[in-house]
Amino acid sequence: MKSILLAATTVAVIAGCSDSGSPTDPSTGGAGPGGSSGVGGTGHAGTSAGSTAVTGGAGGAGAAAGTTSAGHGGTSGGSSGAGGTTAGSSSAGASGATANGGTGTSGAPNGGMTSTGGASGTGAAGMAGAAGTTTGGRGGAGGTSGMGGLGGMSGTAGAGPSIVGATPPMGWNSWNKFACDGLNETVVKKMADAFVTSGMKDAGYEYVNLDDCWMDGRDSGSGKIKVNASKFPSGIAALADYVHGKGLKLGLYSTPNTQTCAGIYGGYTGGVGSKDHETTDAQTYADWGIDYLKYDKCRGDLSRFAVMRDALQKTGRPIFYSINPGDQGPYCTPTSCSIDLVHIANMWRIEFDISANWDSVIRLIDKNKPEYVGAGPGHWNDPDMLEVGNGLNDTEGRAHFSMWCIMAAPLITGNDLSSMSATTKSILTNREVIAVDQDPLGKQGRVVAGSGTNQEVWSKELSGTNTRAVALFNRGGSSASITVKWSDIGLPAGSATVRDLWKGQDVGPVTDQYTASAVPSHDVVMLKIVSAP
Image: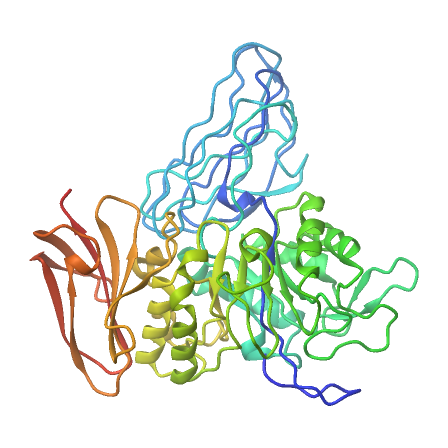
């Protein structure tokens, strides 16, 4: 968020800086807990890639003994796809032997970690309860099956919940384009609609996130946070229903202080930030159906991030937890922070806000270079939102997107999805490049050659034997040829297949190294290289 003057005092502040969540994520499927016998709930994974919110059915009538089964894997990952269909209604079995659910095989771009359904439990409904809302498993685009479904809520012994944020989150945030003045219910619904019509949802984007300025004080009796009724006349719960109805998820913003980074306080007792209201606010978010929390330090205390984490977990609702542990600086990262970022949040900002210019993109890439040690399934470095379509030229936008994907960064767009150009849409929805970001191995790419020069070679280990994503990155002001050597990316000498992901073309078997000729200034050649075992 940019510098803003507070009404009461003149202070430079930052908003739009963090995101948040909780430990269990129905979007990734996950086998449900279940007992060795009894009434077992079954939930189905999505029948195509991506993820979608649906309504879970109530438990069915008891079947014959021994016929209960746990969640099944999805049946068709597809080359891409929008996501799960309905969550299966629970099937019943009075007693007898039970079967484990199928294993979902993840693919790209949206495949999460493989899950195996647990034995059937005693829950009569899906995870969200009778007629409640749950989400289907996330299928892998190009994969052969989706994740395992959610089993019954109650019961003993099971495979356990899957990871929240098993792959970096994909979505949209209101701040970069709409800030405070432009944020309202109509805009958010318009963006949710555009997720579907533009193909963003089919490409794997799922979070529709409200940044600062949605709130308006607290109830004097209960202390509950109130919504700005002029901006959101239908309320947040109704907005969540609308977004969930599109197969998407809704996110909100708060701070571990009494005011927000945009200076919203208003003289309300206790302010509008979540400081000392963590338990109440977390439960309110869960009751509203919120799926993602962006928690911005805003001169709050670092210790309060763990307090909100615990409050979110206690709600029992899977809420992705993204934090910004810095103000204007210095920022703390997994290699330098006084708090345990990896075990507190699902992702954390590593540097001051991005702007829609090349120098800002380079600044964030350089800050993230040494931080690969902290990234992995469920916890990601966040170099801030994407500025593709917000002022960078198309070449720089493609490079920006490529580098976020090679760094396994969250793909949270900040543009107006309803009016983006065909080129912007093609950049943001390139499924082969997205697959690099969403690879279930969860490795963050790093520089393997040319660090600090105008031409850098980045490599990211992907799932599969001897498989690498490579970015040949030209930071300089003129075109240049860039070479990647197999020895630099940990592949054995000899022949390997090379695919250009932006062109969508194989360039044939190549031996020992590959050279991209005349890579344009501020551009990237993005490759997938696979060598024989």
